[in-house]
Image 1 (cartoon, helix red, strand yellow):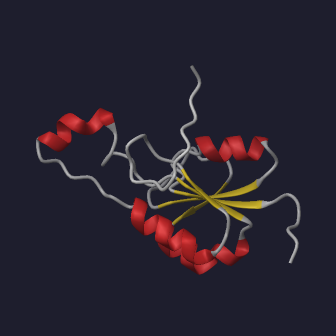
Image 2 (cartoon, one colour; image 1 turned 90 degrees about the vertical axis):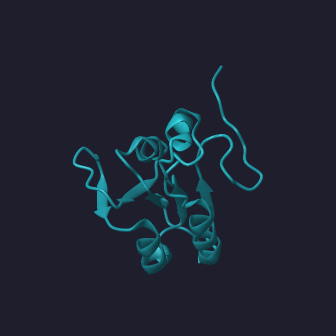
Image 3 (cartoon, rainbow, N blue to C red; image 1 turned 180 degrees about the vertical axis):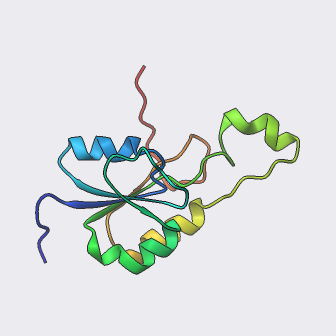
Length: 124
């Protein structure tokens, strides 16, 4: 079935909505999902576990963006990890769920995270 316009994009782990806003500026109709309340999120927001929402609703969207927590691999948290602080690692679980949907997707994370064939975008 051909996509209708604007394309419907699901933004998982949306946080405050920085990526969502960029997608909106490009013409996408965006729905953000995060487990934590996001009172400053500017568009349609659903508070829910990202993977659960994905598996229940992926068929309603044309494309999916996911930004799983990055602290496990971020250089900015290395000193805390050395002290024994543990952070969630949801990249593999998220990738497996996205792959299962057979929808086009983007996973955004930090350099060094276990992405498959990552493309690094930077502005120097």
